[in-house]
Amino acid sequence: MTCGAILLGSAPRSTRMHTPHRLLLRIIIANLVLVGFTVCLGLWKSGNPSRYFGEGRFTTGASCLQLLAVAACAFGIFMARRRTIPGSRLIAPTLVWLLVGVGFVFLACDDAFQIHEDLDHKIQAFFQMRPTALGDHIDDALIAFYGLIGLAVLWICRREVLRFRPEMQAALVIGFIFLALSVACDALAGDRGVLLSLGGDATTAKWLDGWFSAGDGAFMLLGEGSFLAGFYSAWLAARSARTLPA
Image (cartoon, one colour):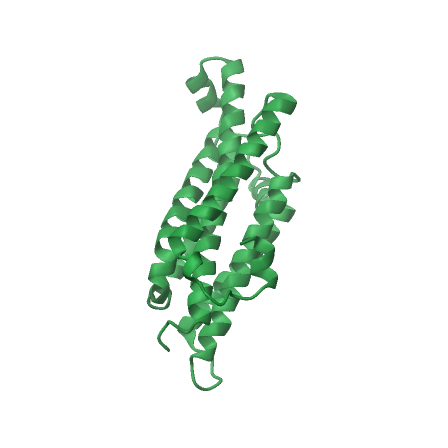
């Protein structure tokens, strides 16, 4: 099941071959293949495993596509849940899916247009911050903040989200773990002092920087893929009306 099929197609008549855990495994494997290819290509071309991760690379396109696919699934869940509710009024609990969809569209735009990196520079300029190890981690903090906002929204609306617990629980847990690992790798890759202390010399520090940068991109793709698996499975469940009306 490709991202394009999710964005343009409809749910299959039978979902027996698309159980949540099996779908999650397939999407993670697909992302691992992409990660492996990207790392090998970077090593072959330049000896740097992170060369084809990051802004402006083909992995950015893959990341944006996954994020937009998650958004499409979230919007689909919202529309499906609305059909289970009599009347035309907006019911607050179901709005979580609309908010999540908007959030993932923003994340795709952030990935494509480097919004949080630009915001990092503006924050440092506004506060007239000199280049320091702390200032270099503002963009990492912004990504972590995005994740905390997502967790907060899901927690506040947990009664609605838990309607899809069998479809989403494992995918969300794994996705947030991958997100945390991505943020950790990004923070380590940007900290010259830590890299030097770990590597002992500039050459080894540069080698570690390349691998931590690759880990940042790899774990981000894996996290997005995990979220995609969970939201797509929830969308299938919502379409088949297996959930109870609000």
